Image 1 (cartoon, rainbow, N blue to C red):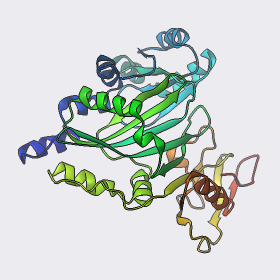
Image 2: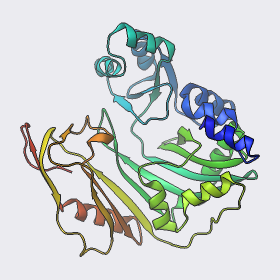
Image 3: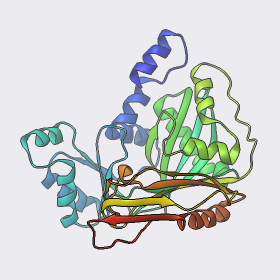
Image 4: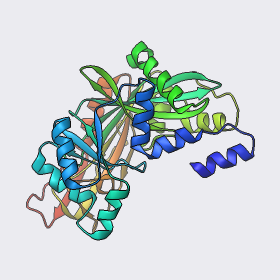
Length: 333
C-alpha cells in the first residue's frame, strides 16, 4: 500500500495519506486516531507478555479477542476465560526466545468482544464527498477461531440511510484525513450502538465485491480504479436485490477422502458453487479451522435476505464429503 501511494504521488494522482496507511496495519495507532475523533470503539489494551495479557483481560472483562497488533490479516482468537487465554497467547507466540522478542516488539492487541453481530460499510470518498455504497453483514463461526462463515449484501439495507452510521463514517474519514479513496470499515453492533473494529483503505476480500455487484450492480473494483485515477466513479445502483456467500468447513478434522457436490444447474438462484479442497488434503475442524480449511463456497441471489438464507441452506445439502483419520466420518458444512 505504501508503494502504491508513493507511485500515485509521483503520477500526481490521489493517494492515501500516511495516517491511513499506518492505521490500516497498526491496530493501536488506529484505535488512538479513532478515539481522538470521537469514533466509538470497544475497550482495548495491549500486552507484550502472558501475565500482562491475563491482567489486562481480567480488567477489560471476558470475553475478549486477541489479535496481532500489526498486519492486515484477520487471524484472531476469541477467549472466554483466563484459562483459555493461556492457550490462545501461546498460539500467537510459542514459548521460544525468538517469538518472545516478537511479542515484546509488537505486542498482542486485546479487545472486548461479546460476539455481537458484525457488518461492514463499503465506503467511497472522492473530493471529500462520502458515500456508503453497500453494507455487508457477516456471520462468524464458533470460538476460538471464529472464521467468517457467511457474508450478505442487500441493496435495500436500512443501514445505508442510518444517520448514526453516517456520522461514525464521517468521523472515521476525518480521522484518517482521507479525501479520495475506498474504505472497508468493519463494525460490530453492540447494545450501545455500532463500534468500529477495523478500517482498511482498500477493497475487501471474501468475494464481497462480487456480492455488491450482484446485489446493486455497482462494480467496486472499477469504482476503486476510477477514484485512484481521478475519474468520477459510477455509484448509481442498477440492481435491487440481495446476494450472499457461504463458506463451508468440516466439523471433524482429518484427511479428505472424497469431496464433491451434487448438480446445481437446476437452481437459478445459485450464482456459483466452487470446491476449494480436493481429495488428500488435510483440514482442521471447526472451531479451530481457518481460511485455508474451507471446503467450498457458494454464492446465491434473491429478492431479499430471507430468500438468500433459504437458498444457502438448500445449497449446503448438495455437498458430500468423506473425512478419514477422525472419529466422525460424516460430512458437515
